[in-house]
Length: 560
Image (spheres, rainbow, N blue to C red):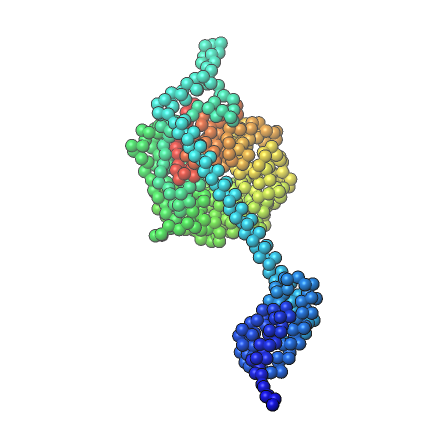
């Protein structure tokens, strides 16, 4: 008797699974399917109809074919099948599966390449950070070495002063002429590698004015009296009363009286840094220009008289005319404004430049010049709507302009390494001085020649550059007279003494030098505690002030 038997779908599934497994077909999709109960779809968990089992068997043959086509028997085919979804395996033919695998492999390769690129970029960044750390470490080591050298060079003050005297005695030879008259000390030659050739000004002979809490960018003596103004990045200007008599340690017991001119109300605001300042001709009013675009007018007692608010950018230059009835300001907003000092209303705004205005200077009481980062210079006149003259010869930013004492020649200096002399009588420059090797930051005319208090002395132009040198020019002949090479870093400021016989210079190398204009030689030097932004002489010519990046202003005596 024959007994009929039945086989469940689950048993059939197992037989199919075992058949495929014993045939060497062990792909993960089927293992997953069986272990989960292949009668349930690994996709949605629903029961698989019995007819679908045949599809599984048919697909088994296709997978073996697909494996051969894709990898040529390479065991890595497992990776290829891992790119397929179970539903793809069941519903798509071999060609479609090949296309899917190729597309996904290409996408995967692209992602891997992107990860490699990101890894390489991160490695470059890490290397750069390592280099930065190495550079910083090297800088710290150099700073420590310099500090050790400075400590080693320190001596008791009396010994230092004695050494200075001995150096001067060694270097200066007193000459006696045939009549037995003792001539003055002969200035020494400049040797940049040996700065001790000049007589050093001792710190005991210097009055250090402290009180600013940030770099001091500008300083100016009042044309009358003994008032010194300073402007700083701490949003204040100060008016110091400097007593008559010698500077130095004897003054420290009686510190100068000071008026603090605050450019903020309440909390300090960084945007109100004082960038420029100028006294009127009577010394009764001080004008300050600020980074907030406002000009402020102060009495010599420190009282705020007026605030001028029309500029829309920082003010970089501020000048009174000689008569004192107009104030001229130049701003980053590309304009220059003339202010009527009787009403404190703006008289006229000049909008000719296409970039920030860096400097302004009066030619006379009603006309003036402006210069800009746009490389041009305009000569303007109150009441005129167009420039009187346009000078376009520089190839870089024009940093400063100055009219000569008679107002007939205009000097300019630029980032193009040149200083130029202009005349209203012609369009091209009269002289083009090209001996500097880097940007020229500032220029000054000597207070000599026709129309000055020193009419019998030659008119000269001084230019100060980032190449660490100062050059003196004979403007009449258009030639270089002296190159003064005592500084070691960029020179930011130069100033002639009132008698035109001496030139003071200040540099980022922290040194103030005093030169003989007649002989082009270094006479005295003072080493401060920070870079020097500006130097200036008092009206008598017996005191020099300098403002420093270490928040101080120094005043020293000058006697030869």
